[in-house]
Length: 421
Image 1 (spheres, rainbow, N blue to C red):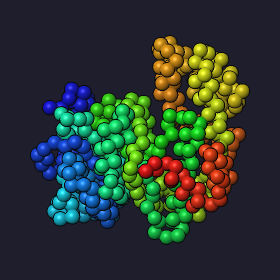
Image 2 (image 1 turned 45 degrees about the vertical axis):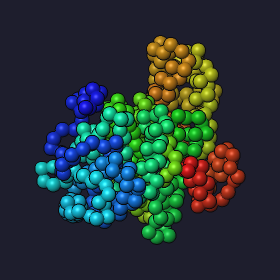
Image 3 (image 1 turned 180 degrees about the vertical axis):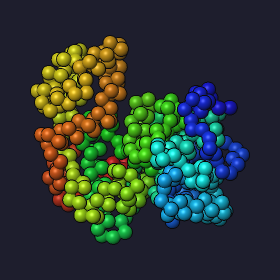
Image 4 (image 1 turned 30 degrees about the vertical axis):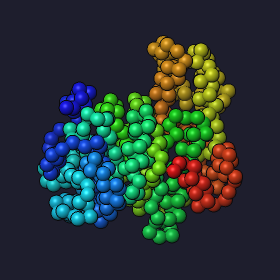
């Protein structure tokens, strides 16, 4: 029997027709692995075969759901490729016999996603919402696991996820990642550069004491079904859906990092979304020297001082805190004033009975997006973005690591620090 809170979500927030699971699902599962696929016929089945290397007893407990999708205005090439994928899914592959494979057709005429609002966020939402009724809610809170069609996993992927949610109180999880090798020396250098940028940003947030110091990679996240319903489900953004999903999940149920496995997203260039890995790699390969610029350590130092000031001065009113922020950085104070901090702080103080509750509410208000916008604001004013060699040695030294030179060496240090195997 589906719990009331899941039923309410399905009634009020879940996607509606025309989409449905293309094959009958005759039993329930402890979790579902959800894979959106857009023009991925050459990569999807490699991903599925990597997943099939997980222990058979765990594969038997998970439904694997592929959402083959494109918008109505997709290119003829993408539509043709998706048709190939749908045909291949309908043919039994002996290599995938150990898994319970299902799929959703969001690509055939009449089933295509809408031009407005039809992107990877909607594809992820379709998969999760259709999977919810197929889950077993009796023994434990079932899991929703997000993977991408071009991302490889290890044989310890499902064991690590199951163990994590057996021991973690958080409703959401992020999974350690490392990009696959590039197809050329130039592509490898580009993906190393971009991954270092991602890791440098999260390291800066961690050093600043931000609760949002985790990676937001769409192919490396998971949650409990109850947490998914509680947060209102996946958003339908065409890009950045993973960032907003994990931010909301952190607010409502918490996010913790999985240990014991790594996922491997593709390193390829892409123009499908306006930002992110694929677009950044494309810009670097096209010779754009400004494609990847790093944040200076000073930005994170300002953030650290601000978060600590709030934590140690919850008795002050908003005007007093705003005045104190100006002593840290006039640009910080200007940013806080522009987002209405003083008035928001007064509401937080009135609505929360003690310092701990006030700080929890504060971090819900000063969320990952406002944090990122502050870093951008500081970078656009006092601390301009720069090349990796101008910031990463100082950032690593702040983290207690020995200074080193070279993007590859710095990336290896951060991969070791952030993978937590």
